[in-house]
Image 1 (cartoon, rainbow, N blue to C red):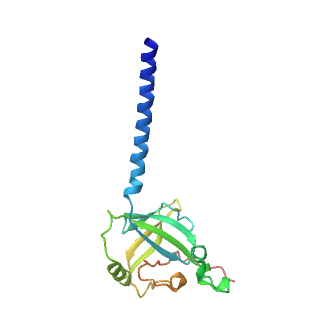
Image 2: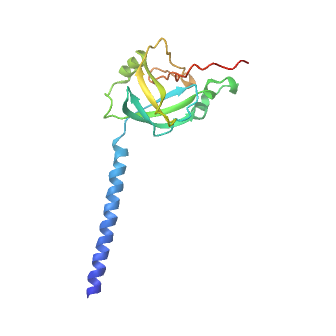
Image 3: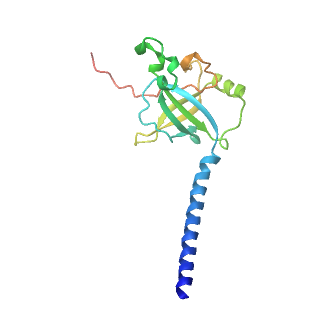
Length: 176
């Protein structure tokens, strides 16, 4: 009789542990489902080495989103590849898709977002210190100084925040 009670307690402990583990997985995974936000993409005509999926998107230092996908524009938009591959714009661009969290940004209509882009909303890659890891920094800049890149496939660029080049040190170039 004592063996049945022992087996019952062991079984109950195992079921409780499995239930607790399942609850933990649901609790951790629920953050992913709660974080559905606004998805955007931008284009870089330079190397994105150091920028990875999961990197933060920040507006003036405040984390407002995360990078979801990084790909070559020609792979994402094969219709944008025109005849001469070396001279095709899609072969030179990198597409970066990112999500802005709903609880971190003010909801705006597409027209309001377009007005922000027209007013100078731009993205750039910024370094997280000495590690070489990059994140996306979003800020309002002079739109005449940093005009938007042409979007792949000739589509309208106004609903996509354009990028601006990274600032590089002005080290002297070797004579050629």
